[in-house]
Length: 69
Image (cartoon, rainbow, N blue to C red; front, top):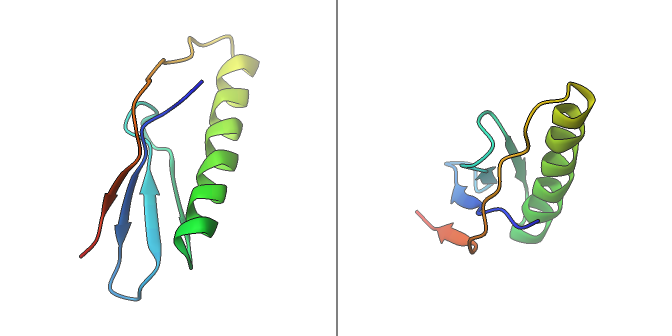
């Protein structure tokens, strides 16, 4: 599955990542690469929890969106 992610840089230079299709799914990283890797792990954990609780898994096929401040 593919999910749209939104990357934003905070005032300390960290990349903050949110996944719009998965409410409450956020992570961060010092670099863009680290933030995206952490996002993959966060998405996998989120979906794992949905499966464990027999909840529907949202579908979202999109592309990466990068917002630089």
